Length: 284
Image 1: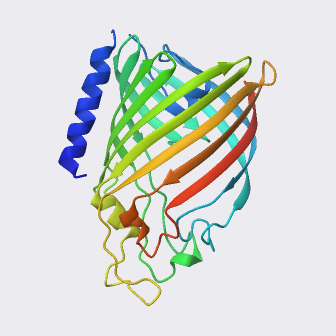
Image 2 (image 1 turned 90 degrees about the vertical axis):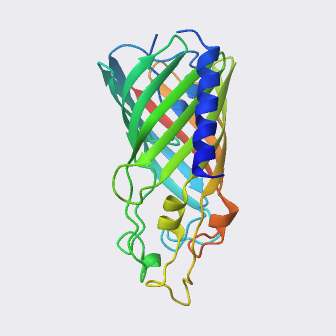
């Protein structure tokens, strides 16, 4: 799918979602909102903070992430689970450890009763360098990026639809990213069950910057490779349970499938990555 078609798809879906909904409030991170069973946007100044510990086990399709990574290798890790959001006069910051986006800065510039449009800025891709992993020795450094653009969120009963249209503002790769995610939550007694499916388009500038190999760095281990634009898909199923007024249990299973063209890169080990995670957090 080319850039122009991706833009057209984004505009069409956004128009349909906005046209279905009445018009006043602020949206949030989709992964956090669906876990809370949100049926409408967040509103007003203020915020909240949670911190806890979690354990995860994951497989990574990317060479060097982590160092020494091999195909289908399971990596167990402990992590600090932080969930926080604060907003003031439309400006906001969001940090959710288990989110697909994790840390986001933004400004809400248009509200609706069941929908909102924000301008957001966030990092989408990590640095790939010999300083980060010995597996990248001999390769040029791929810097982390910082991308910005509109985020639209619609709340349709138990469903949440969120779209991103992001452009590189860090002068890293000058690429564009478009994503569409659909989330749903179910309530069973005190359990909130959620599911997320989504698709992400990355332009050639992004995929070739991180996963292409040019002639100046090519070797027997890393032959020349030119990556094209690619689609990636995500599926997630999770559960949230309040252990008490101040303690919350969260768990999830997630799978990310990468595009078949990107899979051919010498820096890609597999066509997918999987993760399971469980955490307990304290709510302040």
